[in-house]
Image 1 (cartoon, rainbow, N blue to C red):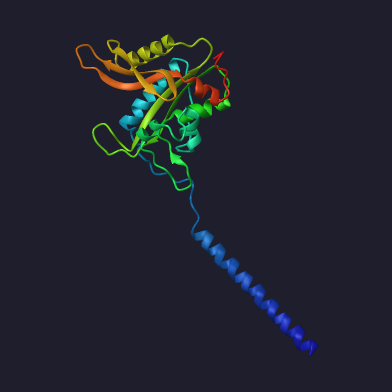
Image 2 (image 1 turned 120 degrees about the vertical axis):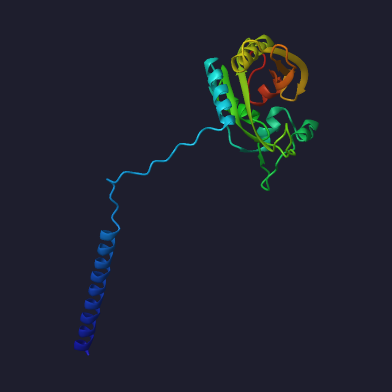
Length: 235
């Protein structure tokens, strides 16, 4: 019985060894036929051109960098806290109805405004702060000549001592003339935004043209500054 068991083990070991040798031979043969010659020239790919939208965004960023701003971005999927609450828009605020929000099943949302990135910036930096926040935003709008469910915003934020409405107007006038031309005229109209006070709409026109509303602006609301721990008696 011992001789038979020893013979069975010898035969089994021989079969296993032969099996390993065959598998290695097959693998080596396969590797030899599938070798990639990395010395071959690669295929050229033509670079795509930028979209008109991205060209304008890049131009705006360049202008603002020249005015001393940095770029700050945030996620596209946001929380109610950053998109609304800390921006002086509590749950029962009627201005929420104006934003036609895309809500997700987990209670988060697709951000309706790049202002959320301002909150994140103020939480993580101390004044002085000078940033612009470019990004895509999402609202449940019907598509027409002036509305889209996905569009781009660029917001500017300055938080520092001694900043006044004069600084705001000066920067926006300079920006308008840089991007639209030196003969661009700027008009400020009183308006309302929950996160700024005072607030204004900004209309632009070229000489001889009609006024066109282009953007909104305002001084950061004291409640927003307090929500991120900034002393409004000093800043």
